[in-house]
Length: 156
Image (cartoon, rainbow, N blue to C red; front, side):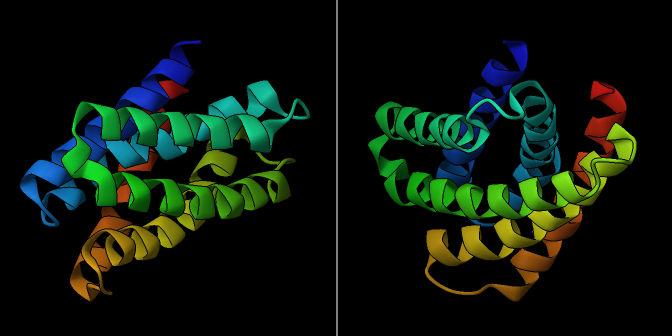
């Protein structure tokens, strides 16, 4: 249950913070909060595997987007971008995680984090800020991968 609460709180905090501080803050969010969410998604994946995983994960993402919007309606575009990006990233992350099923959790989590980070790093800023921002995409990707790696060390 703690993973679910942390997952939602981290997504909501990331949405609200980037809404207040703008695109540059998404890099800090990527390192601290999205790296955490990508890693928590893998823990939740193990808990829910075979138990409507996709529907439940989609529900978590929608709840986080809804809470973000309710707390600050000005986050509407950010919340929408977050939901879309995380849904896309979830698919790629989940696919890679399953492909690495025979590996250790550490390898599965970090391998899938790379896939999820790549998709999320392209989709989120493009939807949230209305265009492809190459520097933001590259910095977000690196921050998510490194942040996710550090979170796998903490969570494991």
